[in-house]
Length: 258
DNA sequence: GACCCGTGGCG
DNA sequence: TCGCCAAGGGT
Image 1 (tube, chains in turn orange, red, cyan):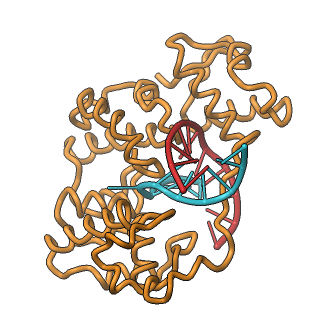
Image 2: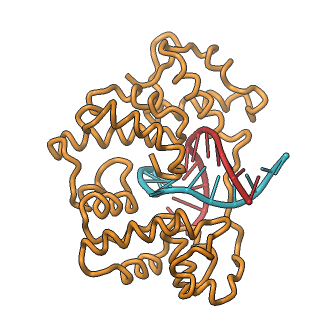
C-alpha cells in the first residue's frame, strides 16, 4: 500500500484491511474483485491485485506464513527489491540495504552532497547503502528504520528541517552550502487525457456498483472531454481486462474479477 | 534503461 | 494555480 503512496493516505485503509483480513489465508479466500474494491482510491489498483496474488502464494508456498527469507519474499507478486528488504529487515530483524525514496534522499544529501538522488536506483547507491549498514543484524535493522524515518520526517524533499536534524553538522550537502539540484529536471507524469485517467475512471465506476455494468453504462462514467479519441476508452477497458483488473461477461457487461 | 501504471495534497 | 511528490514494481 505504501508503494508510491503517502503514509497518511494509507493508514485508514490499512486499519480496515488488517481487521478484515488478519492473515494471508483470509485474503486468499476472497475473489480478487473484493480486494480491489476495498483498495478504494489508493491508486495503482494492480497493487491490490498483486497483494491478493501474494496472499495466495503465501498460502500455497509458505503454509500461510509470510516468509522471512529475502529471496522468497522477492519471488512474491508485487514484492520488489525495496519491499523484500523492508520486510526482511523491519519484520524479521535481518541485515539488508533498504533503499526507498527517503533513504536515497538522505544518502544523497548527507553522504554524496547532492540535493536529490538519481531518477532510478544506481549500483553506486546500492553499494553505498550496503557499505554503511552496521554488521550486527539487529543494529542494521534499527539503522534502516532510523534512516528512513529521518528522510520521511526531517530530511524531506521540499523543505528539509535541517535545524532539527541530528546529522546536519556532518551533512555533505549542507557543508557544501546546500547546492540546488543540477542536471535534468525530474519528469512529472502527465495526467489529463492519459490512459491512466481513463483506466482510473473505469475502475472507479466498477468499484461503485456491485452489479455488472454494460458498455454504455461505463461510457457515462468516463469524462467525455478527457478522451483523446473514440477508441481510447475501449482500448483502456481491454487493457484492464488484460491486466486481470476487469472481468468481461457475456452480453458486453463488465465487473471486477470474481 | 525507458516506460507504464492512480490519486490527492501541498508549497 | 500547477508542478512536484509520495515506504515502487513489472515489462
